[in-house]
Picture 1 (cartoon, rainbow, N blue to C red):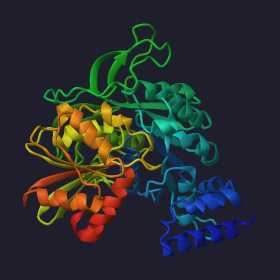
Picture 2 (picture 1 turned 30 degrees about the vertical axis):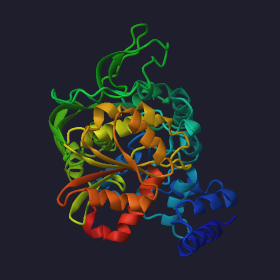
Picture 3 (picture 1 turned 45 degrees about the horizontal axis):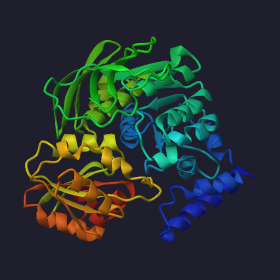
Picture 4 (picture 1 turned 90 degrees about the vertical axis):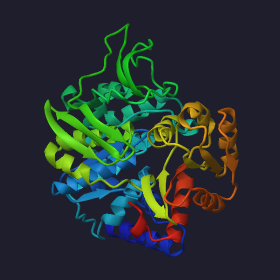
Length: 457
């Protein structure tokens, strides 16, 4: 089938979808293209002069992809990315279709795509990425992915179909073990954290998701644990040990709810980074972006300067002002993610105001049992004002009850948001912690209340 015909049909479908209010056209073109020309994505991506970069892992894909895009653009690249977060094959294909002319021409110089963990193997063989970043692996949507060994194997299958350079989190044992799928050991690079502040809060961790040796299955011994199972480890039985990172955080000067200041050593040479996104998990996202940038030949100073001007990806640590109150929108979707958000923003504050919005649609994952793996007792102050809402708001209310945290369920989501705003004193701060589909709904609701361009940061 002629390329121009497939592109004309899929572009028309995207336009019609938007006009009819059936969606943003972020996936439908890809669905149609898979019927008309299943190899369309590869044909379009092959024209990118500087190739394709893929970012995968459980937490941080959207933020890290955004950071990398900013760094590459600051270095003169024209970046094509799936910035809407549609990260299945159809979403990536749709992003390529949207950017292409009817003749299949792309103005971009490089493609940068966040990719769903289970979908990596479906796109690497066709798009032939030059670089793959793997951030972390945590239990997430068990109804889709199964256990972590299964997810790691799926990612490994995707890596094995390429000759890509790999950028792996040295502090995640399962991620680091993916080096064995690389086509050559020379193509493997690691990033990690050597040091965190000595006064980092001592918060009981969630149950470790990956504390077994990926080779012999013995229990790993950890000398440092930064969060979850992320840390410094060694196997007492075989030769598995945390690899030495090429790009590492060697010192943290400050870290609070406004961001952090830290030193990154790139091949042993230090660079100071001032990063405005809070949390150890976001420090890892910045570190992954710097690792990829280094592999693409971007000077560490350019990467650090770009990171200093970072604005959060939508729904991820977004801040707004509404009716004289400060609101944070903080996406949560698994035990480690929620624990990190509570630890970073809530646990240190007196009488915080919280709204949990929990849903279980397909994009969220149907299994919400993960709520019971979060140490709410240690992370939510006893004087907190807590509301719950969403399709599974009652499940969150029950979890909080057993944690000894008083809360009130408000079934209607718009009413819950209004109630939260009323509860916050003028000049005060509130936190909205939604799962993915709830985040989209609440973000749309807040956009209707006021101008996003004026209040979102």
